[in-house]
Length: 232
Image (cartoon, rainbow, N blue to C red; front, top):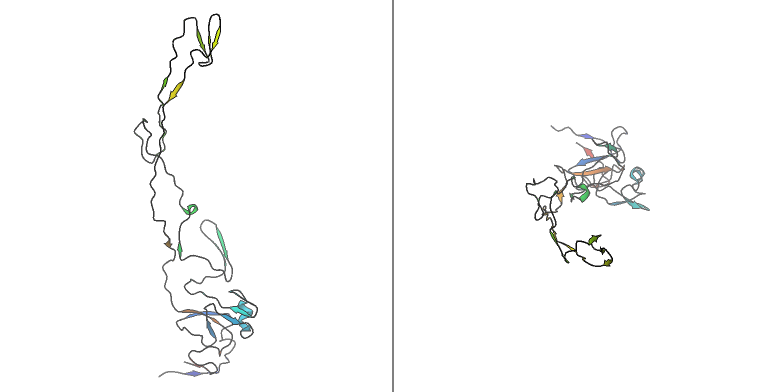
């Protein structure tokens, strides 16, 4: 046997929901004063009780205000939270945060380095990959010979002048040094696909979010607007 309780739509103050209350339901239509949160605009005069609670928090202007639209999102609660590193985040009504997919930026990558493991030509061997090392190497070269100085001559400043016993002859016995080139480079291979990653935790999506309008006769399910409800 099914027990049926009939009562008028004028619910008592203790049992009726308040304008702005929310609930989740598998019902997809507005019903018994509950409006599906889908971001639609409402007339603030017709839904004045609800407007007094949420105003333009979720958008709108003038005589129209919007319902929240959480479809495909996780519903959070306003306030301030502190994580394990003492970093705080504050969230206000109507604020939307988070991403479905995310690609790491350079600043978000873990700190790391790329140490050279390839020695330049002629360098000492025995370098261990992944360590920092300096390489001992030399630049081979040749010295041009402009002739032998007499016993009575002394080269001054290597290239500027020759001192004789009786005179200074500028430019005599000048020479130069040629240093061999020792250019080298290091090539570090790149890796990774540079793709976005899923940023959603394991989730189960159920039903719709509804908000109470304050008008108990509003809605089209399970009855037509204007009929008195029979609660079972």
